[in-house]
Structure formats: C-alpha cells, structure tokens
Amino acid sequence: MKILVCISNVPDTTTKISFTPDNKELNTAGVQFVINPYDEYALTRAIELKESQGGTVTVLNVGLADTEANIRKALAIGADDAIRVNAKPTDAFFVAQQIAQYAKEGGYDLILMGKESVDYNGFQVHGMVAELLGWPAIVPAIKLDVTGTTATLEREIEGGKEIMQVNLPLVASAQQPMSEPRIPNMRGIMTARTKPLNVVEPISSDVKTKTEAYTLPEKKSGVKLIDPANAGELITLLRNEAKVI
Amino acid sequence: MSVLVFIECADGKVKKSSFEAACYGQQVAASLGTEIVAIAIGEVATEELKSLGKYGAAKVLVDEEPRLKDYVSQAYTKVVAAAAEKENASVIILSNTNIGSGIGARLAARLQACYAANVVALPEISGDTLKVKKSVFSGKAFAEENLSASTKIIAIKKNSIEVKETGSGEAAIETFTTALTDADLNGVPQETVRATGDVLLTEADIVVSGGRGMRGPENWHLIEDLAKALGAATACSKPVADVGWRPHHEHVGQTGITISPNLYIAVGISGAIQHLAGVNSSKVIVVINKDPEAPFFKAADYGIVGDIFEVVPKLIEEAKALAK
Ligand SMILES: Cc1cc2nc3c(=O)[nH]c(=O)nc-3n(C[C@H](O)[C@H](O)[C@H](O)COP(=O)(O)OP(=O)(O)OC[C@H]3O[C@@H](n4cnc5c(N)ncnc54)[C@H](O)[C@@H]3O)c2cc1C
Figure 1 (cartoon, each protein chain N blue to C red):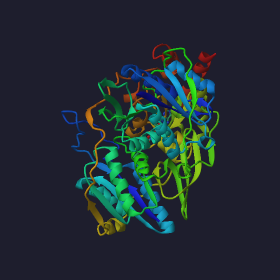
Figure 2 (cartoon, rainbow over the protein chains, first blue to last red):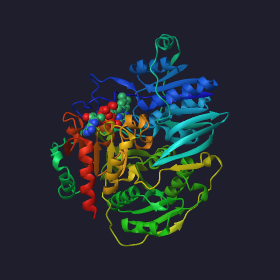
Figure 3 (cartoon, chains in turn purple, cyan):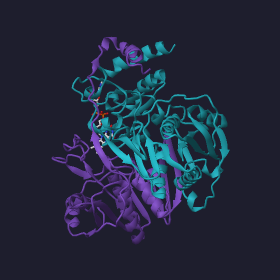
Figure 4 (cartoon, each protein chain N blue to C red):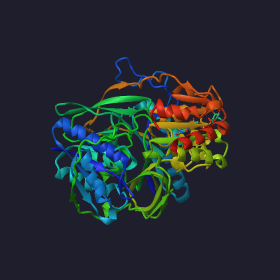
C-alpha cells in the first residue's frame, strides 16, 4: 500500500498570535513551528498501517526550506521518504493543487492528512484534493483500517459516528482518537538524516483568495466574580443581565 | 443570478445552523438585488422546508434520492453543483459544519470558486466583490478576505448571525434529481451510532463542560443535571476524553470541536490555551474553579472561585427553580 501523508507547518499551539505592523502577515518572530497536531494523527496511523501490512509512507509538505526541520521529524517518526513542494502555501486551493498533481503521478492508494490546520482552520484541503482527483473523502475520520483494496472507516458526526466501507483510493482526514502520536526516538532521528527528502518545484496555479488584513478580537472587559456561598445568583445574572438563559 | 443556500437536515428537520445560513443568504441576496434558492438533500418534512420561506427562500429544491439519506461527499457535491448551475448561483452559502464545509471545499475545486470558511459576519459588498471576515488561528484572530471570482462560496460559523423571520411566505417546493454513478456513492455509511436524547453539541446555544477537576465519570451527573436544567449540551476537555470519562465527540478545543454557543459554562477546567481555542468565540463564558489563578478566569465574563461539589448543586437547584 502506498500512502501519502500531507503535513503542514503551523505555529506551536501555545503561540500568542500577533501581526506585522501593516496587519498583512503573521508576526513570526519568536514563533516555534510544529507539525500540525491533526497531521500527526494522520502520520502515526499511516505508519501503523505500514507496519502491520507493508507498503510505504511518503510525507508531503508545501512550504519553503524552513519547514524541513519538521519534515525530518516526520521521517524520524517513521515515514520512508519526503517531498517538499518548494513554495509558500499561499492558499488552500494552491496547496490542494500541488498535492493532487503529485498524487496523480505517484499512484497512491490512500492520502491522509489532518482535518484542518490549527492556523488557518480551513477544513478544506482534503475536500479540494479529493475533488481534483475524483476520489471520495471521509472527513473527519476517527478510525481507519485497510484490508486489500477496501478501507473501513468511522466518521465523526454530530453526536455520534458513522461506519463505512470505501474502495481505495481515497482521501481521509484524521481526528482523534485515530491514533496516539509518537515521539521520535534516537534511532529514528539518526536514520531520518539519510532518508530521501526531495524538493520539487510547484506547478503554476491561480491563487483564489488573499488575506487583505488581520485583526485581533476585542479584549474581554474582565470577569465578574460571584460569591460561592450565593452561587445561585449566577443563574439570575445569566438571565437578567447577560440574557443568555 | 441567485444566492443558493445548502440546507442541512437531521431527523427530518432543518438544523438551526441552516436557518442561520438562510438568513445570511437572504441579506446577501437583498444587497445584490437577487433571490435566494435553497437546496435540501434527503428526507425532510415538507412543512419544515416550506418554512424557509419565512427566511427569504422563494424556492426550495429537494433531492429525495434514497441513497442520499446519509451524507456522501462526492454525491452531495454533485447535487449542489447541479443546483448552482440550474439556478445560476453567484454565491453559495453553507454552514461551517463537517458536512457543509466538506461540500464547500469540493465545490470550490469543482467550480473554480473563491471559498471562505469560518465566516463570522455579513460581507461588505462593492460591485462584484464580497469582503468577508473569518475566524483564524483557532479563534485567536480574524482575517479579512476579498472574494472576487464569479462564484463565491461562504461557510458561516455557528451563531454568527441572528435567525430572524423576514416574511411570512411559504417557499415553493420543487423536486430536483441528479444522475449519480456508483463512484459518486463510494462511501455510503452502513451504520450510524448515535448518542440519543442529548442536545447536539455543535447546535447548542448553551454548553456545560467539565474538565479534570470533575475527578471521575461518576461525578458527571452534576454536569448532566445542570445541562438538563438549562436545556444545554455537554462537553469536556481533552484529558477527560483521552482517559475515556467522556466520548471523544464531546472534546472541545484546538484538537477537538470548535463551538460558539451563546453561553459556555466551564466546570473544573483550567483554561489552557488549546482548550480556549475551541470555545473563545462563545458569547458569554462562565468559569467555576477552586483555583483563583486558573487562566480561564482571564477569558471569563462570570466566575465563581469555589469547589465544584458545593457550587454546582446550588446552580442546578436555582436553574430548576427558574425553569418552573
Ligand atoms: C497540541 C495540543 C493540543 C491540545 N488540544 C486540546 C483541546 O483541543 N482541548 C483541550 O481541552 N485541551 C487540549 N490540550 C490540552 C491542554 O493543554 C490542557 O492540558 C487541558 O485543556 C487541561 O484540561 P483540564 O482543564 O480539564 O485539566 P487541568 O488542567 O488538570 O485542570 C483541572 C482544573 O480543575 C480545577 N479543579 C480541580 N478540582 C476542583 C474542584 N473540586 N472544584 C473546582 N475546581 C477544581 C483545578 O483547579 C484545575 O484548574 C492540548 C494540548 C496540546 C499540547
């Protein structure tokens, strides 16, 4: 089985977000970038599938050279090889086109990625890739198994889940509890250095969307504390003052 | 030209988030000087669909193909795309749900459209361009984007728009069919497992949520009873779902579900930045925690510094009294 795992490079989840003075770009000074947490679930599940039934796991990232540290981390966790499409990931459609193009040539059975990136929260690259390839997309998947050319998946729905069997090839996006992310060990880190990381140039693509400006939410005015001895007063305030119940 | 609104249904009923989408569509259509048409897929009560007329929909297209009873991404996208073509839609509105945004993404690729997800406000319109505001960085910021392609797709975030009746009319119902292939139907769910009787978390206006401070699943009746008294859904923090006290579909936060209810009550949750990321766009936040230094108090509107096991029973009592 040939599996392609797409990873994005996002600010660490504890990052305090700020922007450049013209409000057009994220201020990356001092920001630590990590593999998108949802993508880690996808990556780990892909490696587990490879370990149990053979095959290969290729990781793909659309990004500039500064993402290579995280690509190497994915290799250290257990991917076999990696592709970096050498471009700034300007918007979701651009990224999806690069992935679809590469996947078309690569003959993959399965494309796995996270359900969304924790930076732009688009929840859309998987759907776009699947549509460009004419494949089904199971989003968000909380369980994934493969037997032969059939995948058995669980998809999370509001208040429950659906169970389905889908013929490969397909795109699935990961959400917990699909897998338990792994921490790379020393051996993994050493071998990652020798695994292939190929850099390819992007195909040309139109950019559909462009952010004109970023803004931060208004600051909260501060918490109103209620004496625990009169906790019931909270309910009255929620009804009469905040008018939410 | 028209504005097309995709209507999501559950148990034969139109979801509240779809009424929001209809109201959003109605206001966009009014600014553009055009009409809204709705498209619904699967089995929905006709009366429910007709009621969309009150929110501006002149017409509702309904595809009742039995194999589309449950969501299948390729087939649903095909149906919505066909409806958009038939109605010559320049704007397509969906809800920012798993289904709505799943279709939105596919449609964007299919129709070469501009797509904005997580949109939180009505657009500014100038000529053929819509400027939208969307939530990014897990609710820590907003981005403004110009949509200028001939087809624009907008997925709106829950509770970003007020549901208001704008008329009293009934929408006309029109049967709609689209030819589907086996490939389109690859991925039809075989089985659905649902927690019954609960208020759906993603649809809820009020959410009561518990964290590690609850100490164990045996205490969850406090969360459930308070939720019941308030007509709320229940949720939890990540470690609670990780250890299995609660199911994963209740886990809110950066790696869980993002919600934006009118009221979020956090009980025994510290308010780590990753938890906040999933709930920070709630209109009113209440925090109950015995530690006055818990970071969640900084994001809260109301707070009680106290022990869950003393405070929550009082709240339940008061909420019950109020409900009477
Ligand atoms: C990549 C990444 C992603 C993450 N994603 C998420 C996510 O999506 N959602 C999420 O929730 N977390 C997420 N986390 C974890 C997050 O950082 C916190 O660890 C988690 O939110 C803490 O959960 P908690 O508040 O329930 O537990 P704790 O931090 O242990 O807090 C429990 C609180 O309960 C209070 N308490 C205890 N007993 C009582 C009592 N008797 N009365 C009143 N108060 C009491 C304590 O004072 C404390 O503040 C993520 C972490 C990482 C690294």
